[in-house]
Amino acid sequence: MSKVKTKIPSGSLTLLTKPNAAGECAVYLRYYLGSYIKKSTDIWVNQKDWDSKRQCVKSSAKNAARINARLYDIKGEIDKALLDYDGPITIDVIRSIMCGDDNSEVQLHSIKTCFIEYARYVNDMKYTKKAYGYSSWYNKVKFIDAFETFIKHFLKKKRFTLEDLNVSIFDEYIKYKYEVRKNKAPEAVNKSLVPLYEAVKNATICGIVPPQVSAPICDNFVPTREVEYDPDTEHDDKVRYLTDQQIEQLKVYQSKLKHQRSYEIMDYFFFSYYACGMRLSDLMTLEWKHIDWDARVIRKRQFKTKRFPDVLPPLCEPALKILRKWEKYGRNKRFVFDMLPEDYDLKDQNRLFMDRNSKDKTINTSLKGARLYLGISTSLSIHVARHSFAVRAINKGISVYLVSKLLGHTSILSTEKTYARFIKEKVDNDTKLLFEF
Image 1: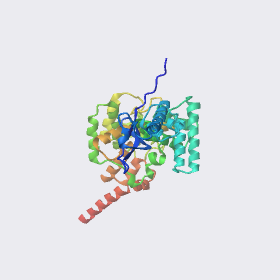
Image 2 (image 1 turned 60 degrees about the horizontal axis):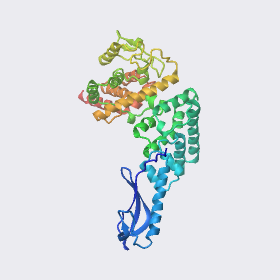
Image 3 (image 1 turned 30 degrees about the horizontal axis):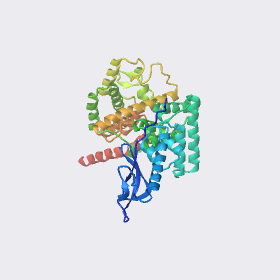
Image 4 (image 1 turned 180 degrees about the vertical axis):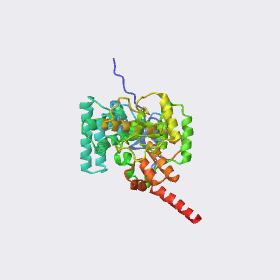
């Protein structure tokens, strides 16, 4: 059986420039793949001597045979390189071959390319372009080597290509870093992911990996305590919150949702908002035994501080309504919002940290849909629900001391620092009332 030849786009030789003073035009070689990719052959011919139908110099012209032979050689070299190319032909592949790139480098522009090789290529390219110095390049080489060890010796994959990229692989790698390599610092884990994600981004820019594949991967960093877990360190210019009007818009949006999972995620957001800014880690670990229905409070140690708050969060009617709804679902006899299995070991800190990271991504993705639908500029997350509660409480005249206790801040100074702008506005408004004495 004869070998099936790879289909390549048809190339053509044509005159594309206006004649110069001598009446000559440059001959271009071009290919069409959705759009034209063209390159000059650096050969000029008189416009009257060109046969556009046959794509060659007319035999009557001077040196026609020699010029045509050179033009056919140029086109033949490109056609052969395209035929020899192992992978789908893309615009970038054609452009690279026409520009005379080394074939081994061109092969890197294929979905079948080994991801480790591609990551090394991108790292070397950035170093060559002086995007960073030698020490950074060397460290990234080691990070890529470590990922290769994970792929080959832990996952037992002989070959991992750009086509195999998915966010689950990197979730497994992060878990591997924590549980197997015993890396405890989130910042260090994130640093090791940088050269891998840079390669994914570059593959998307080159049109090899689709954005819907790369987007969740490149955002898949481990939350650090400074950013995700410790609102005590946030400054007022970083406080993102929703107004009362936007909260009402979200309620209407939830009432129209037909997808059950999206509806439930909105419940998480609203419960955090109504339960005094409850953190995601506490939403996940909230058990039915923590709900005091008679006193209408939550009796739970805060997961971050490992202690009961000085003031137990009260359950207002909207929060109770959400709880009754989930009680009626009857899905999980232990955890209120069914985010963890009933036999979950809360002492396994690393596992919980990873699960929280995964839930956070899922929730934020769903909430992003709500934000885009309603045209809200503020990014939505459980942490935004927390801020929204705090800002609303301060605007309602609740003392900063009480807000601090309900949020579980270690010091009232942390609360004052985080919400300084809103506290100042409240004080300014209250000061105006003194003139009415």
